[in-house]
Image (cartoon, rainbow, N blue to C red; front, top):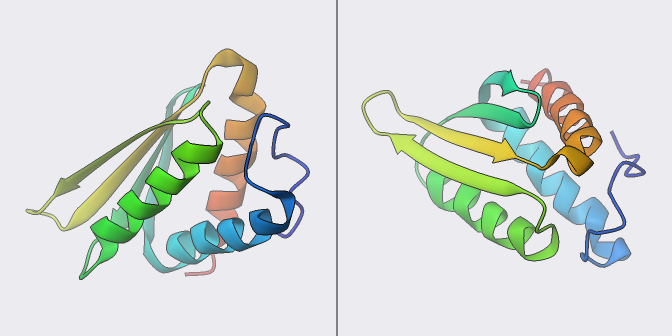
Length: 113
């Protein structure tokens, strides 16, 4: 999914860097996504298979994404018992369409697995 038209104007990541960042997220989801749920319209939950460096990779992406897209609220939790890294992503009402697009993109990337 190379079309990034869904990225809102409020994103401060330079336009030329957006495809690179999207590719990082896509690769993570293609490699690690085990479950995607939508507990509420403004909340997306992703379960990722863990492994060496996965939690750090997720936290690094979250930190960088939070720096340019402040409308996202990310919560990362790790359950070492089942080896999963859970990523909860929430937005405000104004950005629900962005979360919809992210959910679709994530599902598509995860299907590559």
